[in-house]
Amino acid sequence: MVIKMKKSMNKNTKNNFITYGMVIIVFAIVQLLLATGHVSSLMGGLLVPLCTYVILAVSLNLTVGILGELSLGHAGFMCVGAFSSAFFSMVTKNTLPGGLRFFLALLIGAAAAGLFGILIGIPVLRLNGDYLAIVTLAFGEIIKNLVNVFFIGKDENGYHFSMKDAISLDMTVDGETIINGPQGITGTPNDSTFLIGVVLILITLVVVLNLIHSRDGRAIMAIRDNRIAAESIGINITKYKMMAFAISASLAGVAGVLYAHNLSTLTALPKNFGYNMSIMILVFVVLGGIGNIRGSIISAVVLTLLPELLRGLSDYRMLIYAVVLITMMLFNWSPKAIEWRERVLPKNLFGGKTKEV
Image 1 (cartoon, one colour):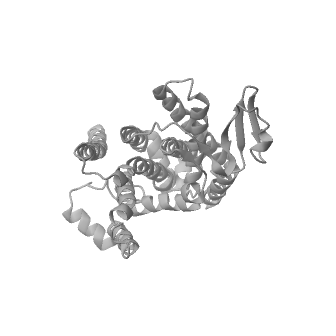
Image 2 (spheres, helix red, strand yellow):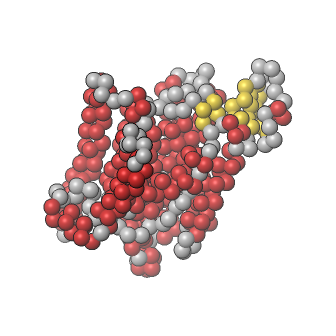
Image 3 (cartoon, rainbow, N blue to C red):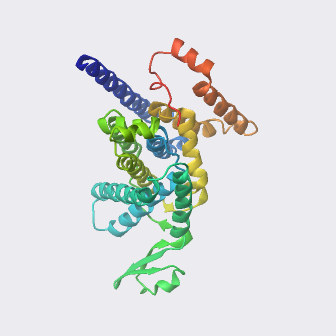
């Protein structure tokens, strides 16, 4: 039994290092292409958003694939992390050095998103069914709309808050509007880089993969596979569901911090923090394979880069994109394709079999 457990641990460790190695190798190749001038400015501008989407896909897979709960408001947690960290950076941009400021912004964004994850999870995760999907969908829309009615400014008399307009802040002439309602936050320090994005991806993978292969991770997957059986052997259902959901939300907040510090103006629009963004992240997870962390990374990269790579084929770009989506879906879920993949391709190339929710 002990030998068998050691072999399983060694196998898991090997698979984890293969995943880390894939990310590092891709980073090295991209850096080489950047140094030799083979990457256009348009593609170079996609590198940080690409890292953001990978973190979002991996973190959502923790909820959807490992925990087995459907969340439709992942962009809402990203929004919380983005705006809380951007607000902190704006307030401290003249008082703290850049590196320390961004590190603290990461902690604040992750903590704020994790806190909202706990507040949502406390009443909802005790229930069965699709309640989490409904509540997270509502949460994402509420957060986006709340941000658009907040006006916060700062002058020599302190901070001013309003939910009406910027004029009602009643600041002095030297006052500065930090959050300007629908216009968002302008002037956030541009601290995000591709290197920082890759480091955050690796940290996300370390957190998620080590959780999956830990005792807590096995308890979480036991709940996913059979809630009644897990409860009958003494597993605290609410505790482990809350743990997975809060960690997933916190990592989405980290992605939000990376996203916010890559923009000159941060606004809460439907296209970046709305329902469509949450669905796009869910598409990354489903096409990459539910429960397949490595597949989520590959899917996020391919589906993010593909529209730009096909931009020259303006008339057929979305047609080719749709064909690729269908092909990836068949490759991951068709029984014949799964049988062929297991027989022909190297074992565990895509991180193992997918798990159905």
